[in-house]
Image (tube, rainbow, N blue to C red):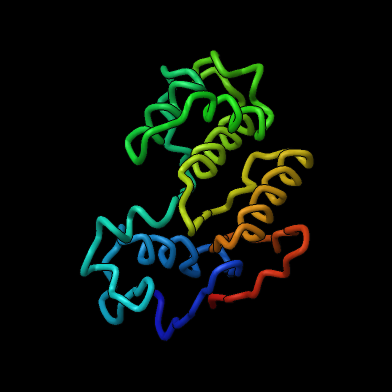
Length: 188
C-alpha cells in the first residue's frame, strides 16, 4: 500500500525507487502511468493533472514494465516498427540505428520469440529509446541483462538525461548511470 508519497521530478533528473519486494515500487509506477487510479491524490505533469488530458500525458512518457511487451512472432525490427509506429512516424533507418545502439543489429530479422531474455530486454529498451519522449518510466530495466547489457542501458539512460530527459527507475540495485547520481525514494 502506498501512502504519503510525494515527489517532483525535473528535466535531466533521475529518481531511483527502491524497496523490498511488495513495497509498492511497481504499483507506484503504474499509478504514475495511469494504469492504476490512486484512491487519493493525483499525478501532475507540467503543473496539470494527468487525468485531465490523458492523451497528452501518455504521449509524454515511455513505460518499460516487468514484461517486455514484445510480439514473439514479429522480428526485432518489426516489433520496433509496429510499436513505435503507433506513437509517431518513423524516419528511414531509425529502427536499424536503435537496434545497433542496443547491440542487436545482427538479430534484426530474428523473431523476438527466438531471442534470449537479455536480448528481449535490450529490444524493449530500444523501443523506449525510439519513443522520443521526455520521460522514461522503467521497472527493473536491468532484469536479465549481463554486465555489458547493464552498462549499455545505464549509458543510454545517462544520454537521455544529458539531453534534458527525465527517468524514474524502480530497481533493487542502485543504477550506476555515468555522470548522474539518481536521487532515491525508498518505499517501506
